[in-house]
Length: 124
Image (cartoon, rainbow, N blue to C red; front, side, top):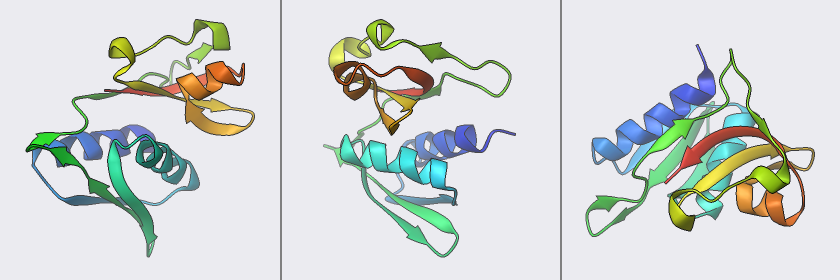
């Protein structure tokens, strides 16, 4: 099983169930993904609680802030992109989350810093 995919599905299902917050098992990598989502205003505050990550979910006029979240690079098939090949998601309304030598960041940040890397997921 893929723990990152499990976290992404938990976030998506939390929004579909209209939950205010969710808990996912802690790992540094998943915590960094949650922090990127928090910085881009797709989720509320994220915090480490015991051995779990507490993620608050945002809604605008009763609609979820995240419409969909998809895992791109999987355990069996890794997907890497150069900085010049990083494209906008849904006309700029969504983001790519990528791993770079300087840590996790959005595709836009990677393009600005001319850094490519493994594409973790798409969020819109």
